[in-house]
Image (tube, rainbow, N blue to C red; front, side, top):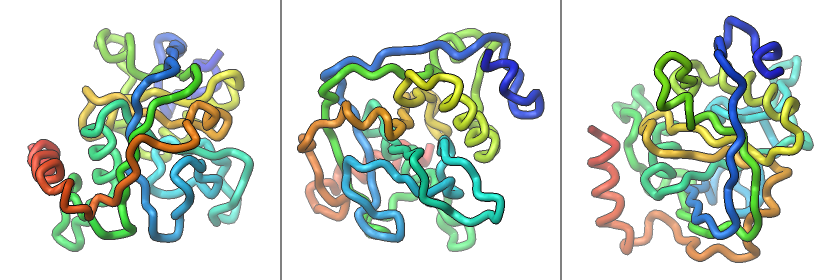
Length: 217
């Protein structure tokens, strides 16, 4: 029982999370950092963690507090372009620089837009679903502290070994569905994406302007 595994101080579940299918052929979108210390190929999970901005990282924390490379890995995807932008850029606002959450910096760490369709079925732990539609049992850890979400991600990763990731509502735009795809779920990714293009490309000028306005409201 997941309810028994999750400490009461983290979240009080009225029911276990459900499961949902990510069907083969489903379009998914992500923004990835092609530069910076965590740069990696577009279809490779991040095995180093947990990192401070990784809300649903399933990695086991090192007792020393240092980041460690481990078998567990994660990639963050969304089911829409807006959701991918919301998740990526809400983590990169910097109030100390006068940069609020949602700001779109098209050059720092070379953000790159990736779009593809899955090539196999995947099974996800569903943190949207009934929890969104029933206020009495609503489950919105995305609005809580990141460490609470990471703790829950670790528990769900272990409690549901036959699943391939989590589906969860975006912290910035709760109506957008996002996916934390674990390393055991990367088989759903195609060899080549439909789109892989740096966000600095002028072709994205209008898209970025429109999405910046959406994220600012």
